[in-house]
Image (cartoon, rainbow, N blue to C red; front, side, top):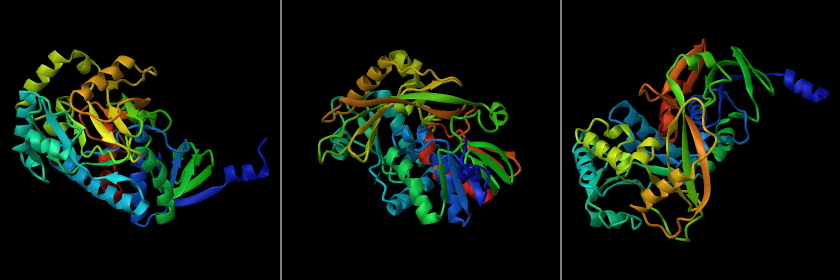
Amino acid sequence: MATPAETSLVNATHQADLAIVGAGIVGLAHALAAARRGLRVVLFDRTEPAVGASVRNFGLVWPVGQPAGARHDRALRSREIWSEVANAAGLHIDPAGSLHLAYRADEWTVLREFAATPLGSSHGRTLLTPKETVARSATVELNGLLGALWSPTEATVDPRQAIRRLPAWLAAAHGVELHFGTTVRHIDLPNIETTAGTWQVNQAIVCSGQDFETLYPEIFAAHPITRCKLQMLRTAPQPDKWHLGPALCAGLTLAHYDAFKNLRSLPTLVARLRAEFPFHHEHGIHVLLSQTAAGELTIGDSHHYGLTVDPFDREDINTTIMASLRAFARAPDLCIAERWHGVYPKLTDGASELVVAAAPGVWIVNGLGGAGMTMSFGLAEEVVARL
């Protein structure tokens, strides 16, 4: 039986200007954007701390993967905000950039074509010779290397650190009211019913990630959204003073990101990759390498799509990811300390995000795919400006 104090808490009514549901990176970004505009923000998450896709990724802020135009501009704005937030909140951020490595002629052709576009030749992006490449990263495998695309716009944060520290900083620096371990049961503005009582708010933003069923399931059912499961790995911390430098990727990644999809040379590369690496194609494998604040290396990933996620991870996928990594990267210790999978929402119609009014005053923001760390801060500024 509930105590009088507990009953009073559940029956209490609290007030704020804006409620945000979900404390992953999308929700945190919207809390920051709203608080910067002077709104009183209350933030809810059903777990403590948040443990969804926002802590299960590379921590890469990856503008180079976004196509020219509004999406690329948004990614660059997000990177600016990451720098501001990291400095203010004491978060790790490594503005080391990225290297796309080419070991086959068709990969080098794609990089050369990309480098000749306005997107590929702007913001300091340039092609490097093999010698210039290894000068930027001693981790790169020199044998067979034809060259690389250097991009200085990428940065790496430690997602576990960021997602766990940002809420406390938002509370201390911007007055955001935090309620972790709290499930939002129902929204009928101005009332929001939760397991910790009822709030009265003017507006709400639902950033529920891959949870489509708790709030507004009929809205999600009416849009082309699914789930993506990815498998990832992490090493133990590398030896002291060893630094990865730029985040690394190779030919498989060129077939993954939208920045490259309209290049005339890409279909030739994609055809060769599918013929030569059918297992990679079947399981959506492309390989990225980043480093955490503690010196660990984060490696991945695979991609499987569907509304129901297979709970079982496959070791042959992990083995393939590691074999692909060893083809282009060397490190002191590639012994794996952790394996996991993440699940994120993905739109199937090619759209970059789902921003939709679920009810008067209530917005759903979801479906950023694997670009949450890259896009959330910029998108949040745009969404909050509409409120």
